Length: 562
Image (cartoon, rainbow, N blue to C red; front, side, top):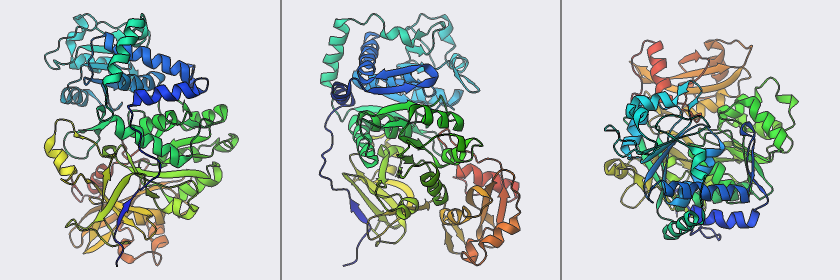
């Protein structure tokens, strides 16, 4: 019988049947004296006992404001200790945390606050070039003349509380630190009463997908979704209470709050933030100073770290594990991370926000060649099938769309049943839009996005395959391949290349490198040398923007519009 592309992560370790708050209680009791959170730029170094106490006081403070379980509370901030406290305190109080992208501006902020009807918003005063307070005042000018906690804005009628980070006072806003002050036994008793009513299937988090078309969609995730995913991510990394994980990826994204915070908390490991945002030098300094054993990052972050001029001066010998994810992981980069950064047990993880997020992950003892060329095998307790355009399961080794089902699939997109039905079919399969192949041993490879595939004169070209080949060129630092319109073939391939510092190359050299090594139709017709790629704040390369830019530069019109 032909083996089909269906895999099931049967596992002897059961799923966790608890809320995030209840699970934190047990972890803090077990690891109270161990370090839980280290944030060098804020001089924060809290044990699990201290972190737990602060979480409880903040959760009680939220309830004392009059916030009720099920209400939504947004957080708009860079990485900081307050972000971690808020993540766990909202879960403890039964509130739904709404992650707001730090790069959002006025219209996006207004959209997400209105879409999920946030009752409260926690915000940093500013980050990088964004003045968050000024942006919020533009959205709700009424805040300048209202008492703290008494906002009444016609544009956002649900929004009552605005809570700012930092010690300065701002009219109409509460201070974050004040929420934990004056909490007494009665307040903590009220918190315990509320916590006892919560169910692990309750929504706990809304994350807005960046989306390439239309407005962002709010993926609604439960305690069960993200607590279990965080736990099994940590298991794949073999995390223990002795580990110290450096997390330079944004907390507003699943990578930071699930693969980072929840993976650590569920194993009693230490969370280490090297800065407010990614900085290669800060990561190198922090790993050395804190003797970190793990490091997370997207490929572009690892490329920047490896390419830092002072890289060789830092002692990274304590590193053991970590995760490279967020976008396709180039084999050449992975190999260097293993060799030069001592991360012999680094893993690759694959997933999407709507699946909490991880569906596949490599194991620390998988052969290196499989860790650099695949995304590993199915995560525990999940199912995946690969289907053709008609929805039929394909044979092992054949390309098709990856669908996943199980505890990790989101409840749906908040307030959007139509989009939810488009993504999740009646059998609860989540349609990822990713093209994948599963081999006979169950290892999966992502070969592109269904919308990224380039069809040149009837030949299917998977950009990922060409990118992997071009990474072998000694002058290529980073590369992305996209399709652009062509009158004769329908589409042609364009390679967008960032060269290594001090290097020079031309299009002919790149094409000559490909000639005879890959099929003629895969050799890029166009080669563009660029300084950067358009990216989301999490480091995901926005290929749809890159396609449009390249097509316009080449005078070919809009390519691959979505």
